Image (cartoon, rainbow, N blue to C red):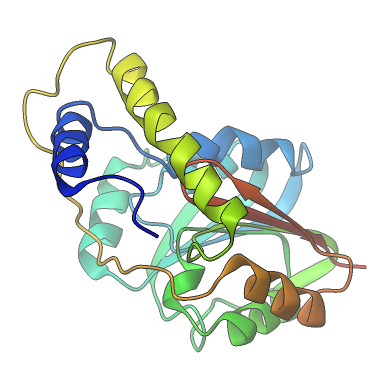
Length: 218
């Protein structure tokens, strides 16, 4: 569905580049609200620069953070104070996850890079009884509701960028260091497959082209 003309899209791209902000970090505080105040072990899958892993270290005795990109993992390690109980590992999220079980597993903007059902099955096996899985993911717009949320997100995205940058354009462009690709699963397919693997899972569409998934291991 074409919502905006190419000219308007180019103007928005220039504005967003001038007032950048992190869509994934926007949900970090929400993620923490879904988790227990304290846990023994936490796992962050697709940890990137380590922002969420460092926040989890305030809630867990130990945090394992895994990412397949060695460059961004090295950056995350450098940014992490030596006293924090976080271990960064370069690993495949399907075949090489550090041994569980974990009381908390988080995964932000990563699962669309993975075989979805296989990844959920893997996370379920690594989650301790009573543990919590929280995913913030991307989906492909398909339904009228999806496209409506996309339309609403466009001005909200620009306004949020302006506010977070306090009305001052960024002095230099922001570049992505990790590989990215568009989501290929629609939200309805995500819901159906997630319910097959995780009975009782809670999913919700969100602003800024994201959805959330929360599940508690029985």
